[in-house]
Length: 439
Image (cartoon, rainbow, N blue to C red; front, side):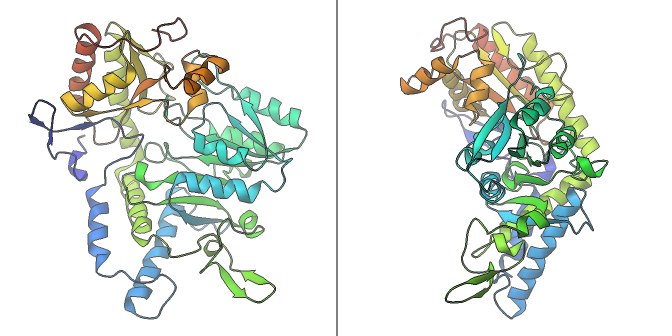
């Protein structure tokens, strides 16, 4: 099925470097997705009704407060939590903000430990480094997390690991992680589990309850701009009891029940963590996008994206001088994220050529996941350090990341251009010509 008619702005032509106009191809959905038409429409429909949320009496304020809170129910339903009073939704501006909030709330002592993996986006690593000690699970030679090592690290820590935080799907290779299996291991040793679902929510169904109590996901974070609602919103979906115990990360208006000269009384969650005026349009857009994805059906979404992903991977395997990273034989545990390089071509130059000459948007670099990319490229820690300090940035990749609206015609244009650049185009050589990068 072709889902393109559901999206806004994807067929507007752009001007190329030669002056010609073309319909662009966005294969950079891992960074930001375009809006669904229904999401754009809900913004337009509600502009005229905009008013204060829980801060005034009158039609507009009451209407916005109702819509704002109704969006929480939509989000809870999306994650299989409808009618479950144990969980709440806290609005944030991004997945990154959500993970920072959780790091500051759940890690209570500098000696407390967080366990994460070497697959993570920086947002699921750096906030926890600031508040406590870290332990890491390595990846194997194909880039998959060594899940069996998680229990070993928990045992080794002797109860000091308070949080296990893992990505739901990698923004570099697209690998999905067995989040419910990891939840069981974390809970066995008294740790919370957080799932960074930024790359997951628009591609696969996520039921936070799992099949049993010990499989439950305690906390999950995501950004709406990676799920077809790019209006500056995100959320924490998490268990109320743990969040009610702690002081909020931010303070100000709207998060307190009473303020006195010497003390204060916080409100309950979720408002406790939503100081200041909230992003009304971001919240209702996020809820609308998730509801529409659920309506389309994740079986349909997965089937469409699986076909396109496998078509591109097989096509790239047949092109000389192209190296892909991650497992390209068994791909069932990968969403449509495909990192690659072209032999003797600079990764940044290739992405610029694709964008300016063909209108194909990709991403190049290390994708805010430096430790993972360096491992996939075979760079030692000292080589990686010199890479940054020198300012040369030898190491990097190109990433194609697919969305629901992409199609086989776009895939063919992309593959043809990759073939041309790899085997006909004369260009600047890749800046790192060592055996460490697997060309």
